[in-house]
Amino acid sequence: MTAISDFGNPYQAGKPVQGGSFYGRKDILDKILNNLNRPRDVEPDIFVLHGPKRCGKTSVLLRLRDILSKQ
Image 1 (cartoon, rainbow, N blue to C red):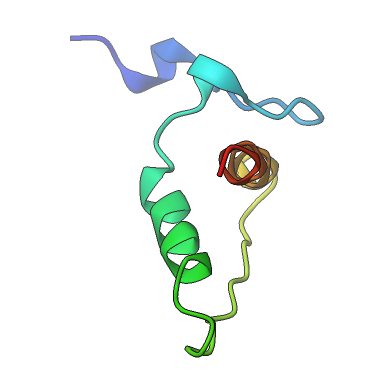
Image 2: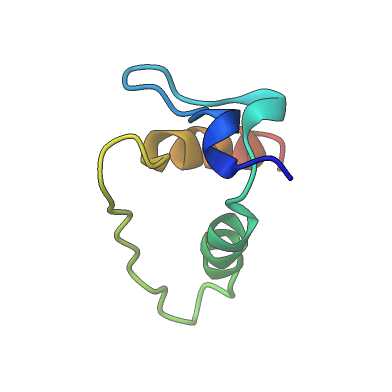
């Protein structure tokens, strides 16, 4: 079996992950998109995206931008 540490960290400071390297954040994206797609008469939730550096915050926002630009 291969240890997770053998794969390395795909996230690098200053270099957001995009395309095929972006994975493991579907739950976060779904939660934000479901909130944004709610009817206008329903008050939206407020989201705060936080975490330690290099955990993928900017990558999530860039992926969200890409998804929303296609809608």
